[in-house]
Length: 303
Figure 1 (cartoon, rainbow, N blue to C red):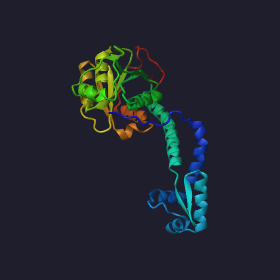
Figure 2: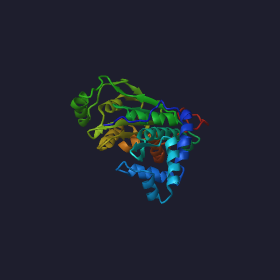
Figure 3: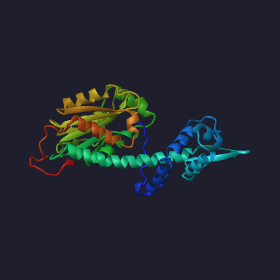
Figure 4: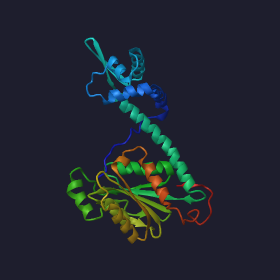
């Protein structure tokens, strides 16, 4: 099953840039990075100035000056025991730094993903949608990442009877193994206006979720459409992709590529961008006519 672990969406990049600048400056020195490494790998909790100086082969005053810079940025803290002062990594500060860095990375990659889409769809106006089901939020996060980068439509499938933490195992997993279809909202999914369908689901017991099975049956106007199918999983992709691709093929859909996103990928802030990159590599737009109405359009990209 998919699981929920995403960066804090409330962080504002414009507010954290000054803070990150100070942190990068503090870490932009080889000796200070070596101090961080020594402190992060130390298991004794008793590294002081003299011990660090000996390991780094520099003077104690030099170590003290570097530690002062790191403490000013909150990256390390000290504790005094008798005549000795020991230094350790400030865990909470490192967590904040990681969150800030991931937000910056995600923001940069969104711009890169948009350029990737622009180049891959040059002189063609492609209309696409992402149809997905997500129980815990991971598949939704990937789908929303695709939308942010490409501007495509999102169609979230929901079960008419929501699963609970108990029924997901007593009912959902069993229905998934049987490749059953859940009653869903919306009852019908009209995709006649789209050139490309991107269909995603978490993997349950090695199979696609019953909700996405229901979504395949609910498709209208899907014959002859190009599609990309993707799954998110934490342990094994199982047979979810080939089973989902076959169900779509039986509906007259041309599946151009199948993509599995493992847990280590879906945890990244740019998981949607990674999916887009793999989609572009598969070139699902080849053979599509310019525009969706038969008239040439000069606007590039996916909408």
